[in-house]
Image 1 (cartoon, one colour):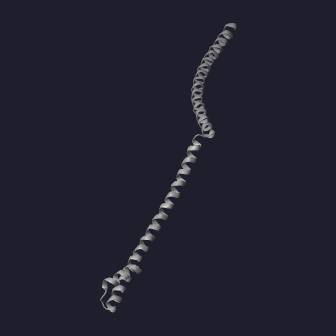
Image 2 (image 1 turned 90 degrees about the vertical axis):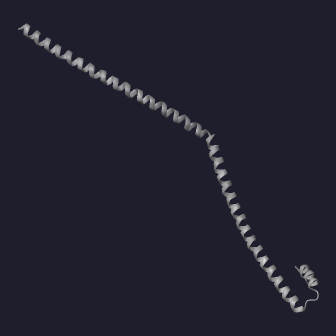
Image 3 (image 1 turned 180 degrees about the vertical axis):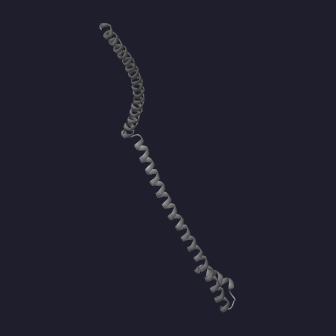
Amino acid sequence: MAKTLEIKEKEIGEMSRVNFEEEKTKMVEEYTKKIELIEEEKETLEASVNMAERDAMVSKEIISQLKEVLSVKDSPLVAEIDSLKQEISRLQEENVRLREESKRNLEMMIEKEGEALDLSCEVTALNEKLAENEK
């Protein structure tokens, strides 16, 4: 800034000292405004950098969590869980099969009981006939 003032002073040359001081004051005001604008821009850039750093930290955390999730996918626990799921499916199918078989067995048992009841009635009738014949 001092060099710029010296150059300006040489350019002005014959200007009166009062005009020079006014010009110098204007230049100082212009440079002050430029400095203020630069400082505002600096603050804006610093805020942007801070936000970018926070975003980077969040991204790193997300990546870390994703890596953890992916590492769990390959862990023995996942294999054990998959094995248990398959076993549960197999047991559910077995349960359905056993229920159907129990239902069929129950129907057959009811049918056999009906036949046994019929035979019991026939035996009772035959016993009654036999008793009549013996009289």
